[in-house]
Image (cartoon, rainbow, N blue to C red; front, side, top):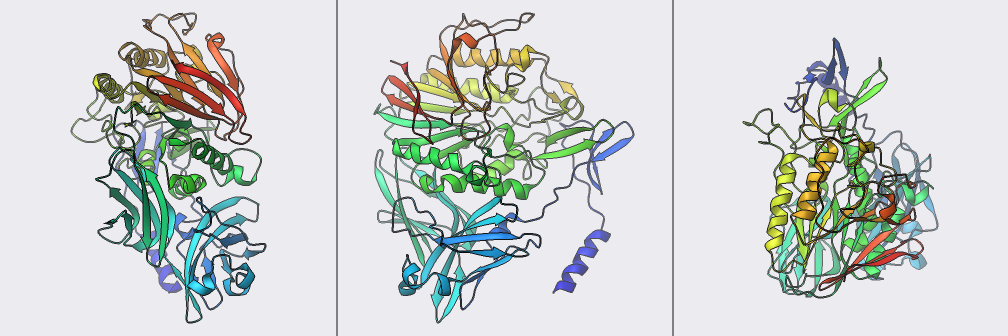
Length: 624
């Protein structure tokens, strides 16, 4: 078998690679049999290779049973370290977590084992596998450098003195797309299986065996708590969810908001390969304790800025695992940020500069498509920037999709409009390679926003509209150099196929404010992030919001609006900076924070708590 694999690999080296089709929206980007390249003068700069030293699926698929337990082969020859393990007792508590055994097992050259019969029997058999003949283990991979790489699950059956690895849910189940009459339960299994979910006396099934499952639960009653049972082979998992009230019921409820949970400093669970799992777990548990009906989380879930799809998927998995035990019951609704970037990177050695563009092909291998693959979100947003004024070829699709990164949803009398200010994002060198600017909302998304707010303005069941976008309109600490300000430099704007947009970043910010504030009476606040701190800004016509020299039209604001920034979900903090509007700022804090928004009919109250210490950071009425 090994000889066959070597022969196949050598054959791949002989056969020339086919050049990829480069989207027309880029400039100076080409592709040949060697790969994607940036052309500068006579120089071809090829994109950095992914350098994948693992496949994400190898962390949970290569497990076999033996007479003594389970053997793992992660197929990473250079992986050495430690495997911690312990049973998960799904009957002991509402939020099942692994309880790690007092001993661990070494990982050598990517291989290890869990000696279940010898170590986890008799007084250490906390799940009763010796009687039931089955069980589920949680395991944690830690490298020899001390990094926590991945938290996984492994299910087994014990019969005739032999352990057998069996499929289990390695992600989920998650409650998504919750309405007053339906939801979607999603989960990922370690092997292709047919699964089912039973709600009351009705069973909803997969039509065929699959790895990624999305099962719609429909014909439900509003404002009702339902128990649901996920069946996977020999195993059953019991959870519950509550449907939303009838739209416009105006019952009192709470929802939670945060962003920016990419890995933090301090080691341990503050950096589980790409995400601050410690603070995210605290945020999830506090949200549940406060009775939040859903958690909106807008951007920078992970470190990102990756050239590797495998590493991006591992980071997303670690974020999902951090909140998984709570996502069984209430929706967590992520938005797109700059750290969701999945890039081609071209290093110019002459200028010592990196050029970065969104990965392609856009349909199945971009930052946007990767986000779509990892989450189940509403699909009622705009299609893309195709057929916009700047589309270089209206006969074909040139841009990434907005699917599941721009959308809106409602809960009772509240609507949440989720924007993507890092769509088709080129982090560096966009004047050369073309791409979108960080914090810039492009044309088709702007038109969609205006249509959506107009629709919600007419909806008698909606009293309050929140617009959430990763980048603040008015940054205050950490991103004053960019976001929708760029130190007051309106020259900053996107470039499409070498052609720059007419409107600069401040003009575009004003256009957004005009739509959100002047053309809508229901919009309450913008929920933003990107800056790793909490603060609340009161935006009025009197607030100074322009650079000293500004020769463009200035928008007049017809009413007061609020910007609630909470990028304090675990990423390294940013301190406050000097801005023209700083005197309008309330309670700037670098503590980790969770914003809790209490809605009671026409009233809205905001409470902000530190999820680690439970200290109250801020509290105020937003609408009375």
